[in-house]
Image (cartoon, rainbow, N blue to C red; front, top):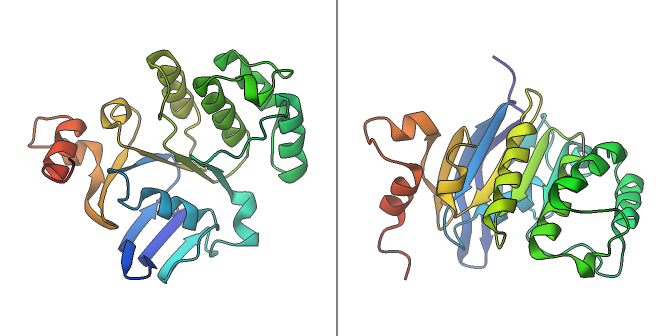
Length: 236
């Protein structure tokens, strides 16, 4: 069995008295797509930001190829945030040049290959892009890194069905034995055919986790049904 790419032991993150993650455990090996599922505030984005080295944990350990998140893991992790980080006045070709300068592992040719999937051209400005086109650009940039860990925070938010299908196909295409992909979402039905493992988070606690076939065994139901079961009564 391959060594894990990412391991997490008793990871805790608190903001004052509020726990964003509570004793979170995880072992992630290559070739896997892992869904972090749950409503807003469940801890999904917090975990990704810790893995990306943007937020420091309160306690516990997270290792990427045996190293804690920091300068030495930057080249191993590609993070697509929900927050807006593309300059509105820039053209796409300028953003691609910026990423190529910023990340030695950035594959410019691959990024250019993915642009047409989302009706993008290098001369378009970010401010002229639709929500779906912006999501496609962010995804193309994230997957053009030769990273071991890909972190996609809510890549399906606010996009139409057609773009959603393209995004899901691209996530499937980017699966690789030497990398692990994390996808956060509350759109569980769309992810069911994409992810290999699911982790249901509730106020920072992993209340249910396992491979998709394991979670569905004996239940004869979809991941969306399991989601309703886990969070029933908690969402207004």
